[in-house]
Amino acid sequence: AQSVTQLDSQVPVFEEAPVELRCNYSSSVSVYLFWYVQYPNQGLQLLLKYLSGSTLVKGINGFEAEFNKSQTSFHLRKPSVHISDTAEYFCAVIRTGGGNKLTFGTGTQLKVEL
Amino acid sequence: EAQVTQNPRYLITVTGKKLTVTCSQNMNHEYMSWYRQDPGLGLRQIYYSMNVEVTDKGDVPEGYKVSRKEKRNFPLILESPSPNQTSLYFCASSQGSGANVLTFGAGSRLTVL
Image (cartoon, rainbow over all chains, first blue to last red; front, side, top):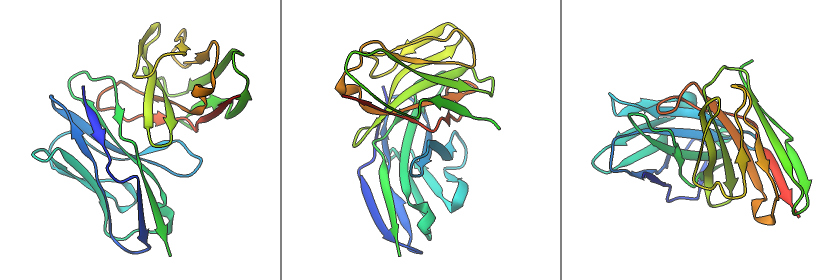
């Protein structure tokens, strides 16, 4: 079984500052990795995903994440945040080769302040 | 517009009164799933369905039932709701499982008194 750890439940940051949201996973088999974002009072939507190939993945709204197999991490970064990035961010993992249960982390609330 | 539609969006009910949360998708997706979201616990999978008449338990299935009689619909049934089922519920669908991206509904906030 796989699991996901998001160590930071809340991350406050000033507008235009860089941000990193941390995600570590545990799995005995190879996995696909995702970041989803949930804006206030909405459902989740995909930010980016890692399936294979280049370990640096670019997503929507200027976000990117880097897959690090040795450290079993998939941290999300943005060089300059905007007020509109205030949301909750979820890291998720599913095993490759027929996996059908997507496991989510507990989420990180990003609060961007002026 | 491609979407997942959940109803009701908000519901307050009492312990023991059966209720159904409907979920419908218009993308001809094979895979559908229900999650509940609780503070500090993230999203936990309740049930999922790989196709019509094929359903399976997720991580927290106790107290819930589902059915998949048609491809587009995947209702969540609470036969005898209890206060610990007060939560925010999300339905999601995708073309298949694995690498496929989930499309989420807007959520259904359920309060059981």
